Length: 225
Image (cartoon, rainbow, N blue to C red):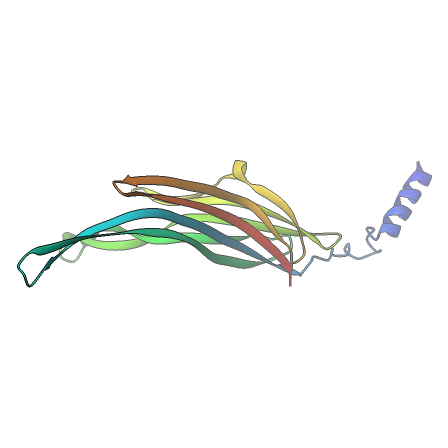
């Protein structure tokens, strides 16, 4: 039993976990590196329009002899256009390795407030009305952890803020959390959406067709500072 205790103490000392005689145990060093997490929203829209439209008219000319001269005129108009639009915006935060930060997308909403004051000197009270601003919206809680191999594990958790007549608060939706492993400085898409439109208009002397598509992508980029 004594030999096992000596061997166990030797293993702890070799691992650097044993406390020196007469002193407290050594403090474990914490990482002080920072991670910059960039969240980008990119939207690409492509639209096309094709159409054929017939045109016609009648020209009436008055001759010197007094007899009118009637001439017909016609034509064909063709349209074929394509439009591409790209919109992008981004939000970033800098978080310590193993810490937590947030990327907030919110707005300030005015809420009426009422307070009652009582004056003991006069024995009367009065009601004061005012307006308070509550910040309501959605946010993403960001938790980066630096991994071996120059990689970063990023955990994104949606957070919803609310307010009621009794007060406000926040709700962290842990069930909807997303965990990604991103190379240092690399970009990764973790969500998105698509939409499309196709419309055909038929006219008396022609037709017109319109097509459009929209792609939205959410990407995250993690970089060690």
